[in-house]
Amino acid sequence: MTTVANRLAAFVRTAVLAVLALACLTAAAFAEGAPIASDGRVVGDDNRTRFVLDLTGEVDLSAFTLAEPYRVVVDLPEIDFRLPAGTGTTGRGLVSDWRYGQFAAGRSRIVLDVTGPVKIDKAFVLPAIENQPARLVLDLLKTSAAAFDEDLRKSQLARDTANEAPVQKADQLPPPDRSKREKPLIVIDPGHGGVDSGTVSASGVREKDIVLAFAKKLQERLERTGKVAVLLTRTDDTFLPLAARVQFGRDHAADLFLSIHADSEHVGSVRGATVYTLSDKASDQEAAALAAKENASDLIAGLDLQQETGDVTDILVDLTRRETRNFSASFAGGLVGDLASATRMIKNPRRSAGFQVLRAHDVPSVLLEIGYLSNDQDEKLLTSDEWRLRVADAVTQAVLRFFGQKYAYLGK
View (cartoon, rainbow, N blue to C red):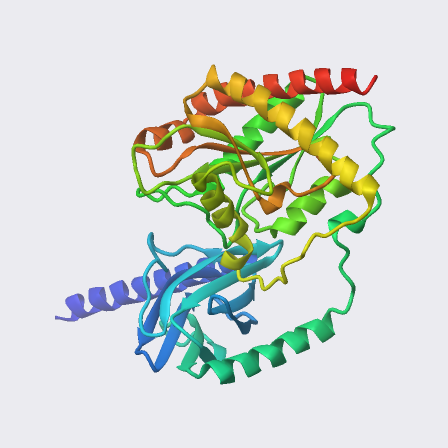
């Protein structure tokens, strides 16, 4: 019995030391990077609902509400989200669903869609205790529309006071100077990102990942020609507001702005690429619906932006806008032709609608939907390196032809 007891004691000591060593290694790994979110859940009913997020460490947070539609936003430092697949697609009580992701460099955001007006009763982080992880806790209470509006007014006033710097509209900024540029500059804009995943296929493939991978391949193929310069609006999984994407193109005096997306449709048989330009009147109902969906990206990410009228009376700005739209249409027409030789195109692939991301008045801008994640065949292509290379080469050919024609027209 003594021998057995000694062996058992030795085994226990070894196991304890192993657990402690593992805990130390894990703690060290956590200390080196962002806190990890390992699980999230919603509990409660239609009067009081609690949201809980399991974390590897304590973090600071700020939470606020937004209307039209009703949402609750939680801003955090950078979080490494390692949540189970499908997390957030369903809710409970006052929360219908929720999403998460990087919102800006070093910042993460959680957006909860709620069923009606709510009040944030408590928002706090519990430290880790014994074998329990640290936990972010958000308690929501059902409230009246009037009380919600008053809380919203107060929180917006506080945020406006903290950020009093005036924001210039893009059309009010001086025109960029391209005269000293040796090569045309193309800005590629991978849509969505961070907290905004865009379309998600039935198998879990996310639009934000697909378009970023394609944008990087397109950048590589364009730069390889040595004839153009290329910048990406985002190079990682970061969210950018639509206005910031437009302003990025203007700030860098882009000669061409190309926004990349992947579509979805309730009819799974619909597939193929589509090329869109800006128009005050949509070319068809499908284009109008897509523009409305893409223009809602800021709302999806929890932004509360006032709609700008965009009214500009300067005749020079108006003339520049018309010329820009003509150049956009010219590039779009050539792009459709080159893409048709490399990939399947949707019926009537040249379309137009009121896309916010294409509204720079002095930068030719086109939105390319490279395929449908709602279609199994398109999904296979969109995740194929061989397909990306082939289509990127077709876009590159269209870009080079466009600048050959454009610069000849301008006498350069």
